[in-house]
Length: 288
Image 1 (cartoon, one colour):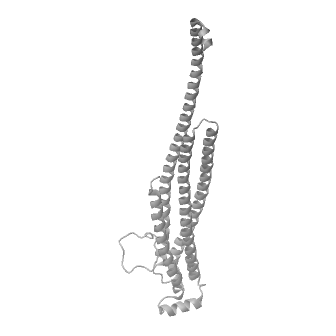
Image 2: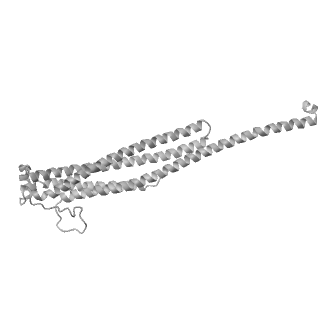
Image 3: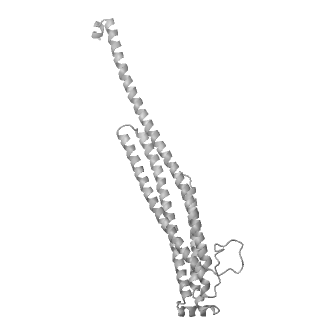
């Protein structure tokens, strides 16, 4: 106070002006730094949001591809099961109006001699080869989907690490860190559900396909033994006594295998329909 009173008014004005001139650049620097930080945070947030938006578009594309693939896969598998069923099942007493999957194949569904089984045997062998090819494609697809999942996992981990790094170097606020981490984990949780669904559909389809191959192979063996005359005559005699005769021994020998195949086809069709319904419900659930 005493110093202020002893300082001439003109000098005091000059000192005050000098201090003001010094303060303005400092304030400008502080404001610029604050603006740069805000811009960096906003830019990081915008970049993260854009990346997630792109990922959600990929999710939509993956779901659409899954619908197309499994619609085609299950349709083909069901057609194979129907063909196997129609070969094994007795011919219907009445004609049905719907078209049979065996139409045009000239199969004798009421064979009287082993020679009548030759066209059906050829069809069964073709069905068996188709089944093996289908399994091979399923295995390749599952391997590719697993690799894609691992890539997505690495990308997710990298994005989480990037968020943490920005937070630690003070280019991302605590609030933005929480938001970015929450949104990224939400996206990754959805990818995990996608992969779980893919893997389950693969195993269900593979199980049904392997069962179909097994029954088809059994029918092929029965047909070949019957045509070659190498069927077990003791088993044939027992079958003849059960049905009361009236059919050639080699033909009767097929009946037990046919009945078991028909039961399998009916069970496999029901399981396939259940898997289709479950998958459709899972795919139709909206992203939370």
